[in-house]
Image 1 (cartoon, one colour):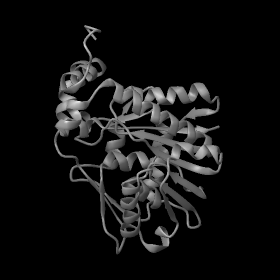
Image 2 (cartoon, rainbow, N blue to C red):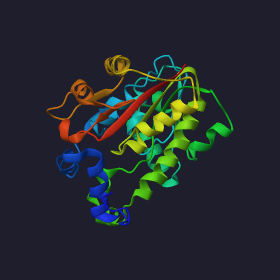
Image 3 (cartoon, helix red, strand yellow):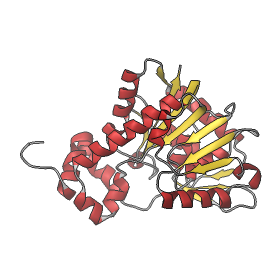
Length: 288
């Protein structure tokens, strides 16, 4: 801040905060956040289609679950990434999809029921709890964990004057603390040799790379997958998907992955450089 006595808040504070992060890129990036999202379609025969951001599809397909018996989607509502995982779930595997909000958990359960065939949906166990507390009761009990953490969601903030007027840096700090609790729990829950896919739709590094850096500092056996490793898992999962995934017109999922920008520990799909997909940060972590 040029003037540390001026509190950053509201629309002006929002712009100042993200200008410090992105510099001259902020204005075109901000402009790319305000149009309507682009949507990919997931469908299974005889079931309702579900629509979600193509970057969300790409990130979830980077989690290896082919040989997993127990899979977790820790913050699963409204259910898009649960459907992405379910399409590669092994025939005898179980998937646990959790949401802490009772209302959103209800929506999640409906999506599972309406958008998946019975032979898959019967193996998706939905629950309603604070996933950051699970590691108090169990540890190293899951083969693969997806954590699409609650985040600042700047795209939604910009579209809602109420949230934009109420924005302040303290919001980012509070949310990043919640994310850290979830991520450290996720790493405790996964088995040795298993993977955690951490993702957010946030722009701020404090909610993305900084949380991964804290994880590496706390756990010596947190190994970050390379871009090439993630791409191999992504391509394998995309090719073997049991339902249908249709990209928006003019999109190709492989191109979305390739347009993702490298960060210190993961990849970041940003809408100003990916034809409107994202924003979506994701990082694959192995418990070595």
